[in-house]
Length: 400
Image (cartoon, rainbow, N blue to C red; front, top):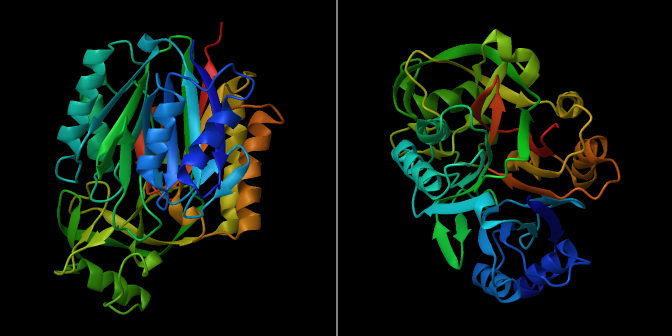
């Protein structure tokens, strides 16, 4: 059976940071060796130093991870340029498998994700959950999920986050072994038959104004909204100069699409959100999911009071779904826009504590989270790509 251990640190020296994480995570163990290390790091660390020191300290461990806009550990959030968090895992080699792809883009998201999934299945046909960490730039989240499901089927839970940077939208990195990938993808397939994962997401935004229609698009690239160049339409609508750049323009590219009514209660909202992460010189914008012509979209605004209320409701629902079982480990993904762009330090500490305390009380439950560019959590019994959410992935021992 897999065993989970976690730790986080703000130590700026990269070698010392990974050493401290392993020492704290595996405190009381005879040595720092383990079988798998999943690491999340801010963009400012020396990745080579982290990977080489992890290999030296734990030579038998497979290593996988990615960058984000900050980390969230058992002790709360850290969005400094040198923050690091890990989940150290011990278990049999047949209980997990790691794979990677050097590059993933919007146009290749289905194909690359299907290849990644096939490699996972070839190595271990007993995988029952997948932790997915692809690049968060130039990426089609819905097509990536379809690619994985084309191999494993829609029943397998896929959870995780797209990797990112410090909100500059320039680049991001993934790690496997001693390799550093740029705008690639990594995944861990778990195959412990005694464990399962339950996932849930919430965002707490409101839609504003009247909807508008996508009048020309190709896959996840929107050329026209209401027969006008997409970027010009959005900036005119919100009174922002057309010369504004991403991510400075923020809410201009925060758009929502209506959900089917049967999903409203579970999601705590009538709409699902997406953000434009790239715009072209012709005024077109790129969204993480495919947006067909004819789709109705809405502008959105952040409602911080609602964020707290909806989070409390989601945690209550998760506790109910646990059915009295104590979480065995928790993975966590928050949108980077819910970090420093949304809350000050006090409120971020509070919002994290409002997840952690009800779920795990004062128990020493391993917790690994990050601020990324998108989240994978199930909705209505299906895998779903989200943005702007808090998404929790609770590992449980199977009942009975």
